[in-house]
Length: 145
Image (tube, rainbow, N blue to C red; front, side, top):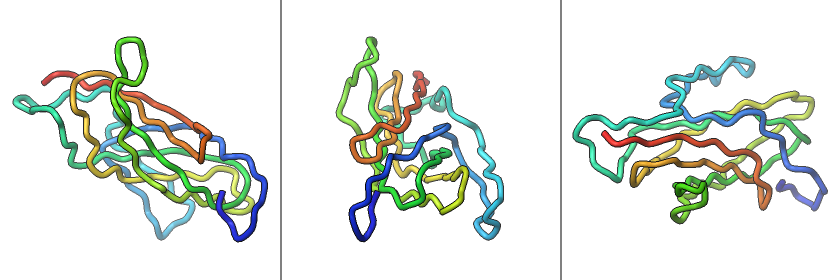
């Protein structure tokens, strides 16, 4: 958590972490619901596509709760090997700011992921971090065209 002075806080708790094609949200209505389009569990490229894939648009949606404050979050994408271990170096986005408002029970957020780059078929994992604390992870499968 970042603030003017040092304050001991616990990292937020993430209730869900999803990847989807698009998110719709009315930013003029603070209590508006998020609409997730095409939640991604498996990605099958269009016929004739070649790796590395460049997805034109992908979004990360999550809900978090915790102490009021501002948190700097990082997101890693890594391809996993057959044993579930990291097969490659991670692609990292961030820092991204999460503001948990005083009195808020849950904060929902949607972040655009520029250049989600699957470089080969296989299982990929997204990991959401706050400092050294892993808050959540989710995986998806990329298949051959």
